[in-house]
Length: 284
Image 1 (cartoon, rainbow, N blue to C red):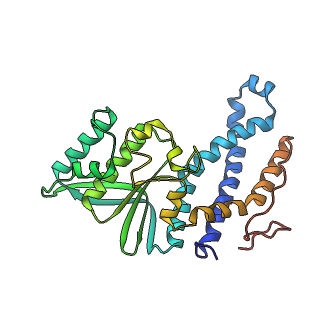
Image 2 (cartoon, rainbow, N blue to C red):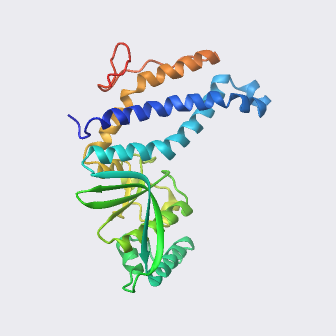
Image 3 (cartoon, helix red, strand yellow):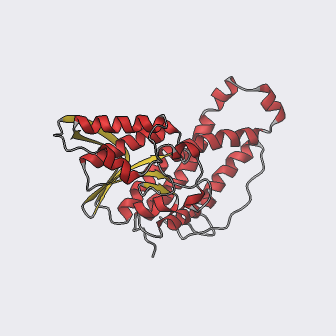
């Protein structure tokens, strides 16, 4: 038995499969628009299947990063003991004028590289806290919120190579929440590491302007992201659930490629227990 409880394993696997199926449907639906804005040189030099893959990858990556990761992350939290979990969580609270000014100044110094030192989350948080009375209403939205063992967790989920603006906005909201609710947990989450498994290999320079991506405890990358939202072993299990839907996803892609006159994909070995190995039919 894995670390993820039922029925969330099936729900996660279905999300992965739906992402592929929905992408095929979107690309098909945009064919008329693509024809109206076609590039004649591209059509001469590239086979239709190659053009399809280019469009497919862009659409798939956008959908995966924007919606699927949030949804799967919510399921992971619920499957590992969270009492409640929501995506796009909006919360209202109050801060003092001093806290808001301190946070604004800190973010401005990060953007202009005038902080005078490297980012350091404990030091950064301490530098913006104030004891003044909190009377100013503030609202923040986080990509994921969950409560486990009575503790609130707020996660800002970003593309794995965020620009300075994306990282700075996330840190601003994290500092606000942490000032208002000191006992809560806040995280800056990247759902995989594009530079390899080792965290210290992460090397997207704009992010380091805002966070110490190698040392800040609030930064979660790849395995740390999934194993923190869930528990140790979650990352590997989520990958296994994605592998479990390889065959039906490939079959759907092959049907569309055949209509385009392209070559089918090579068969994949089934990994996981959610699909019947002979027919590819769902067991959930």
